[in-house]
Image 1: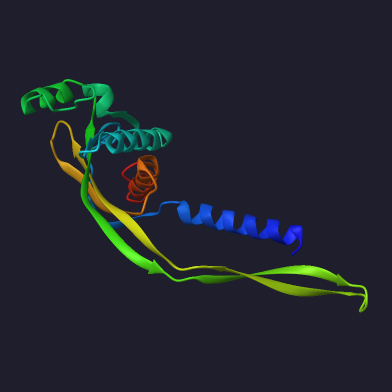
Image 2 (image 1 turned 90 degrees about the vertical axis):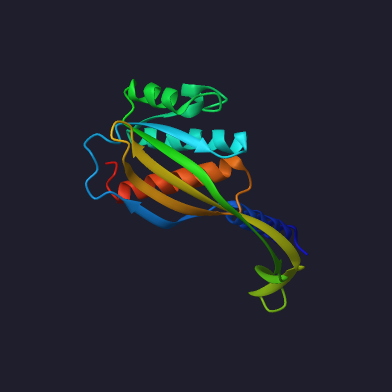
Length: 209
């Protein structure tokens, strides 16, 4: 087999692995208030509510970063309340801290469910065309090589997350949505995909410009 053909196959497999490794997130339910208060989304505190600290931090950071890019001032609960968040604080302390600040809304992101699935992926044939030259016929002709990938069992985990936005002063729910992220490779991958999905939703519903 020619060297160029082998390199072409390796490049093809590499590209396929990159495409399939990207996490996709879809919105499965969404609601927003018809007339949100003026400047409700001016400055938002993002709070992750989940047991895994790494996932919590990554989601807060990704969400604030995505909001900041859209001109919304956003900060993480880690920056405001420290690594323990609300663990050692009374509800009255949290409320007074936020109402005494210039925050206009709070976004609470919580883990609703982790859906684990095991499925069998059948083997696949890939055909690769390459040009070869025949001195006898004095022309090009195409030959197709085939490479077979054997079947295997694949375990996937889908994350169902919920995001709720409340106004600080009025304590009013103005936005709520649930999303499903398909088999993220790591916490950062999950967080970025989730944050982009939420920001796009907020723009579609005209919650942010």
